[in-house]
Image 1: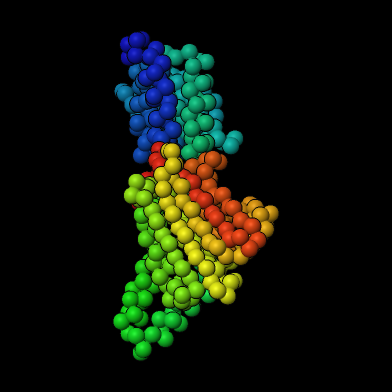
Image 2 (image 1 turned 45 degrees about the horizontal axis):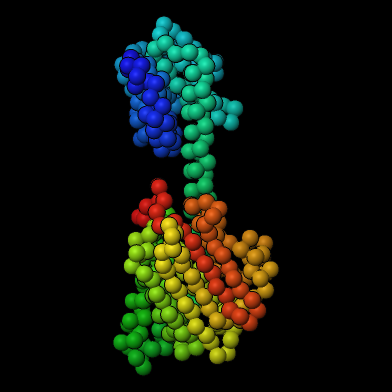
Length: 341
């Protein structure tokens, strides 16, 4: 048993509780189960602690002993089981036993109940996080499906038309198109960097200028201090595509796109602005909320940002009819658990 002075240290206990969420993120048989059992043993100050999934796959911290009888009794009866110094407490999620917490050593019943509730809460949190990540991956697939086939067709048509008249230019555009397709359609991790997103939209804009010509004017500026900031993959291109499709192409004389990125306080602020036709602010709000169509993934991008960083972050759309549109992307300069892949 650990000394009472260590068991009673509230700062150490809080540190173990905070890290338990990470340890249990992939469940009772995940790679963090051993570390979770060790932290629980230190929190409780007992000889050993075990964690089992519903299939009786058991992970111990400390001297394991023979726990098979109480483990299977707890799994079978869905109630606490005791044998000698061993206590097995079932862990319940959604009304079903999701595993068992085993404790070897004296522990007050109230303390055991609180630890069981804590572990159940963290397991549910892990499930919800995984569900949110699956939803985000599904939304990313939906966003890829929205990428304009009209643009792809036009870009390939322009490339084909240049093969005889300007083969060198055609070759350059083919390479740009390959880069565009690789970034937009290939499999990626959940996060990338500001630098990679800006490079991708530069490639996209080269292709768009080949299609639209001098009607499209572009200015891109990003400060070096935000280049390494992680953000969800495929965030900026849909905003730039919206600016062109719904702002610039609708004007006979074309227009300008400005994309800027900079640090502001503890955040990275990216703006995508056009001087196109604009829209009614109420319509923009409806699009952002997903209540109206007419944009490439605007609400999709906003949801993914807020899921990743919280309600303070996401998109802000500023627009008026005949006054252009400005979309602001706000993400934190750093966020625990968010790493570009």
